[in-house]
Length: 110
Image (cartoon, rainbow, N blue to C red; front, side, top):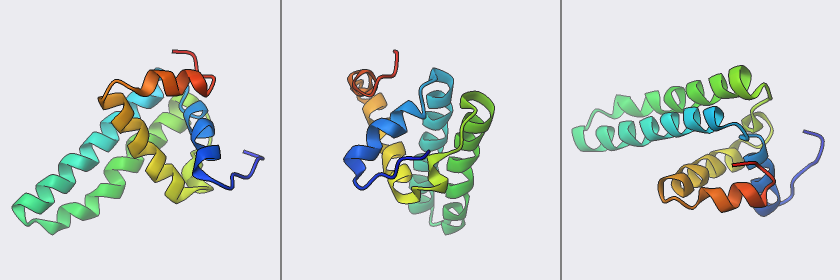
């Protein structure tokens, strides 16, 4: 990752290219979905200790994907907030069936 990104709009296509393999994205979707479920459970049950599990749930699956499947360095290390936002954006676009065009626009084969 040599290029420096000044805006989220510039970063977004890079983020998608760093998640080019379907298995990488699937592991991200699983981790992000688990984060959402844990957050909702924490709010509804009052077991706020569940919030402590959020980073573990999210990052575990993402890092397995990057180091084991994609064989690249997670963008989180350089762009932590943009990576978090991009992960939720990618997850939401996937859930709503609108990710394909974004992947193709970023140069990722679908």
